[in-house]
Image (tube, rainbow, N blue to C red):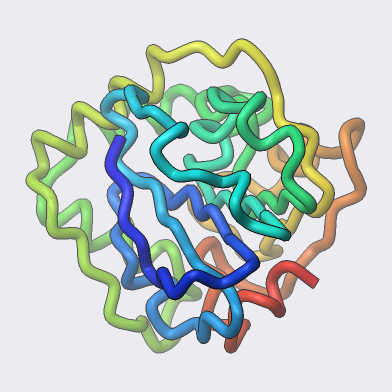
Length: 212
């Protein structure tokens, strides 16, 4: 797992952002930081990382925002985020490869088997409404690395679930079926349906809007 500080100015408040599969910071690059330091995690080929290096205890207020496959991956660090002030999940579930609660197994296998530069372009388009303006989203890692990440996510078992305080589900999500997301969250927490797509960050101007 890799990380990158998107903003680090010794602010009192921290946002930890678990990104989606294959992504870098471009989906959220337009969001204004305000008074938040923002730490992004991505690349889930392995989950070897020492959170002691980040000194989370130095922050007055701490927030977790996880998106897509980041929702599943963040669960592996449930204890780290237990005392965070608020935890928000966006268009993801705790069972990422699942016919009822996540991406159907057949679809996941087809994505893995036929992953290529051209299929990645289709994947990016599917994060938005057909025909809508597509913000500049870049996937800079090699296809083989992205395949390794898909395999790792599929093989890694969660040993717990984060208790999220807020869940956003996009009505037009073409990556993770909306009904499966609803199936997963329906008995766990009240969710909010958003009139958007899988990559819904263009609906917001700043990070605070997502937290509130």
